[in-house]
Amino acid sequence: MSDDRSQDDKAMRRNRTVGLACAGLFVTMIGAAYAAVPLYNLFCQVTGFGGTTQVAEAASDLVIDRPITIRFDGNVNHTLNWKFKPVQRSVTMKMGESAQIAYTATNTGADLSVGTSVFNVTPNEAGAYFNKLECFCFTEQALAPGESVEMPVVFFIDPDMDKDPELKHVKEITLSYTFFPVDEPEQPVAARAVQPAAETKL
Image (cartoon, rainbow, N blue to C red; front, side, top):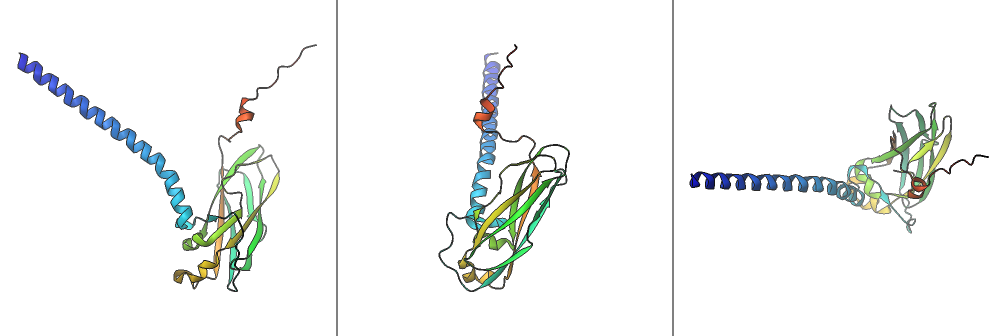
């Protein structure tokens, strides 16, 4: 009888150990999945992978004679009642030269709506050399019914692109944005904390 109990105890301990190990593995996988998102974004920003552009704090201090044409594309997810397009379709500039263009968005729906955009450039390899000084990327934009807004983009093409043998033949780059609806718009902490004042009855 005691041997049976001992075997049962050992089996229970093994099951408990296996259960804890599985739970620990599950938690580790969830944590790794969340950590992978910012790491992937950082990788894309550094390498230009997938057409991800770069963020620059200052304009280029070098301008070379090689011209490059930048084409602009605007799209809207079908669930967002907006019109979104570039003010101009293209611009030709020298590598290292800064340029400012703009996109316009209009809420064609009957209610206030909030959108945010994602973007990329093609060819994808050019993302490592496409530097933005100002952009509305990933910024939530709220529009009342019928309201329009103009959103600027300031950028330059890194002259080092001229040294990249894979991009020697490239004469055009396309910058494309797509707006998606934001179901739960972010609010500043202060705005969330403020409660409406109670009405004073006379």
